[in-house]
Image (cartoon, helix red, strand yellow):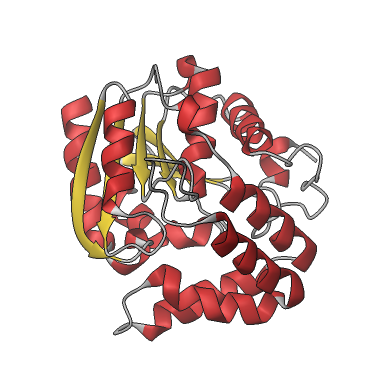
Length: 265
């Protein structure tokens, strides 16, 4: 089975290539509204990260994927196997740091990065405010360890925000529940304990940062921190609330992304 098959890579449309990376516990389907709005003018490439969606269940390796570097290696392998011509990488949540790591390692592969709701570390470190103390994260991970499905239903509304649209939290919770429990636990630990602040300096690829308002996982201070550390980046504050604007406010994401692509061309 090829790399592209193992990651369930799908490709539609024609034009400048946009390569999408989803966040924790999701799969490529979370991008369908954004992708459908852009496919008329772009080559849309979607894939499922190891351990997620319809990716080959044997693909997730607790050694290879013990850090986000393993996922970055997967992303680079997909770019090479699909022979992508310097795509714009559009990534969400933990996918943003996977993209950052891949771009640092292979800047020749990417035109630019669009990072939606990014965070280099969810933990507070001295003056850096990631949003959570270590005991908060440990408690969250303990709940996931004891009951994956309870954790999924508890966290989905918090992460999604937008309580007026409960169907979105329901869809996110369903996605979390579809993960194999041991993978969900392992990937969550890698995600929430990662610290990639040092990987932001000297970023060789220009970046657009989309910062959501009232985001339970990535406060405004995180977006400001990223913008200050990443050379050649531009920060845009969204009106969209919650952590998943590509699901809750796709039109706003498409408008900002389209404007960015126009300026890059």
